[in-house]
Image 1 (cartoon, rainbow, N blue to C red):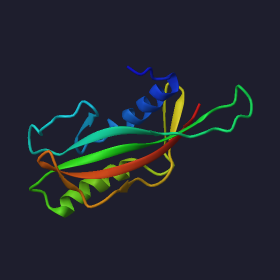
Image 2: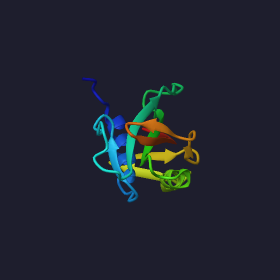
Image 3: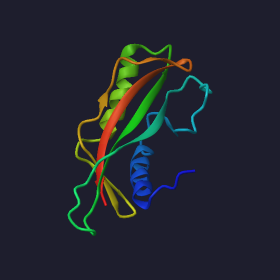
Length: 140
């Protein structure tokens, strides 16, 4: 098992704490995701994608910059219309304001740009999956 550094865990906690305040659908964090939906209720799958970002070395006690994408999959029943599905995905985007800062245990994560829906959605696990991306950065 890979050891997670302290700042990585704090970044994850800050993003997850804000995500958990969304009230439009149940949230599942990958890899703890149901293989098949237990009902026809919508839900969200969260994947944490980290980017390699090189901080220029100035001095040994200089802060490092971290970047990544909070990748959300909005899962809606097949019976939903396109407008209903996009509407829920748009509400998920609106939950993360551009420039918003989320702080947990001394680590602050900032949303770098307006979250966006990526693509029209596709069938997956008996549901329609609509990808939403939230780009973030943190220093520490």
